[in-house]
Length: 147
Image (tube, rainbow, N blue to C red; front, side, top):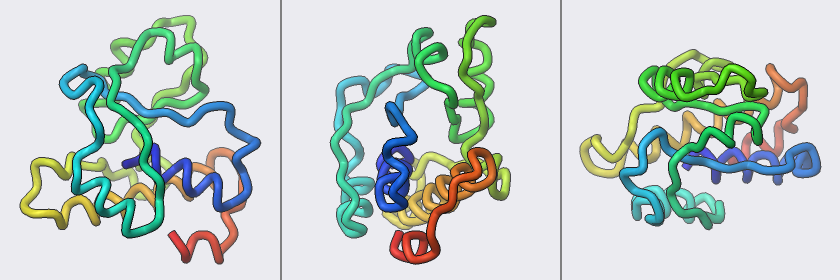
């Protein structure tokens, strides 16, 4: 979900040319090759956000390929930091670091579908906060209110 929301935010804000690649992966290969959870797809479809990815696991090469790698919670961040080669260029952060510093808990383990909506809302806020606070890019208010 975070990848789709971030890519959509970047696109709608007219910032697509600033990013070579936007991708997502897991710290484990539990769901490698699978499509996103149907509840994730339902929330994103309702918002008009395209979903076209399959799960994959993070690789050592990702730390050289990307400038930023976000973990959704402290366990993700710890795992990423442990995997990160010393010579890598990637900066590893909690996705919520640029906003309220809170983790994004996996909505799969929540009750019903309400966790997926909450996760979506966090992803919207955190995407905008990263773009504005870390990169100094402006997400126009009309774009932010449409997300």
